Amino acid sequence: MTTTATTATTATATATAATPVLSSVVHEVPADQEAFDALARERGWSDGLPLVPPTAERVARHLAEWGTPPDEVIGVLPPSGAAVTAEKLAVNAVMAGAPAAALPLLRAAVEAVADPGYELHALNATTGSVTTALIVNGAQRHALGIPFGAGCLGGADGRAASIGRALQLVMRNVAGQRVGVTSQSTFGQPGRVSGIVFGEWEERSPWAPLAQRRGVPGDAVTAFGTMGTANICEVVATDADVLLEFVGRALAHPGANGYLVQLSFAEVVIALNPVWAALIGKAYPEVDDVRRILWEHASIPLSEFPRQHQRQYEEIGWVDARGRVPLTRRPEDVIVMVAGGLGGLHGAALHSWGTTITQTRLVRP
Image 1 (cartoon, one colour):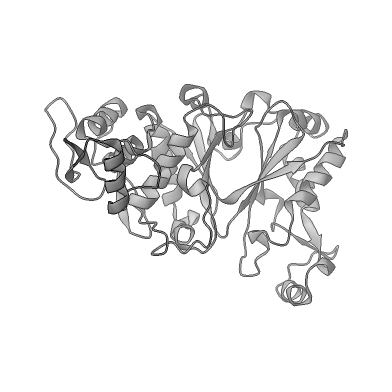
Image 2 (cartoon, rainbow, N blue to C red):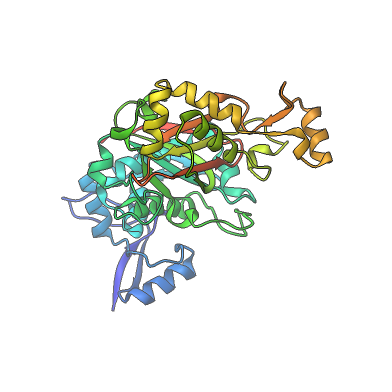
């Protein structure tokens, strides 16, 4: 027994007058799940996890619910240079198990990573273990079940993993990110399969939402090229300044990509749990003050680097007046947000990979 599935690569499919007309190639594939997954791996469509067969009916249903023409071009993605159409996005969303309601968010995410400033070609081809993290703001967090409390970076019940996976399948099946071919990532990371998708706990933040501070109020998504997540555990501090010093120091370590002498730019995201945010926000109601203090502490004395590194940092003028090497060039490059469980005690750092500049986009219906 076989079923008909579409792929997001080229053109020709059929649909009734009541459904969107699709242009993807139609393949006869096994109806058996294991057989379909084996075929998907053989064809290069798969990330290794079971896929939902993207039948014409399923794809058309997603597009109809979304209300977007199948041939609408959302962005052109490197290294393949292929266009992501609404149809191709829907195909990969179906395969990932992402709901149709997530397509507006995914469209905004594609628009963000397609921005030249995001340097997607380098991100997709690098030896680094970088992936795109999506930080979600607005009422859509509740409508889509995007986690922003306990377990928000993994393990929370919600649709975040399927949404992140859909974007990663777009990277594979449209952008052409293929391990050992176009992607030379030495290790990769789990986020290259399921993505990293989480929300900001706006209701528990003493500051304006992240996207609003970046000029996009309401439903929005921020794309950040990250090497992954790093836990910061602190169980002693009862004072905001002590806590900020500890967190800032924890952000700076010599192996962070931000310290590569080849780079002229780096960013870092720090997610403060609501307990920490309340303590810090009481002392510093302006988030820019928080960023500045974290930035001042997120540095390493030049003397702690090996001699060869010391010479390089001195030659390019990276050493500040204190004799320290900061992780990022400016306080503005420290991105502060609020998320995580009420248990406190932990923060999460997401270090940038390279020259990718964080992008925020409005999520529209």
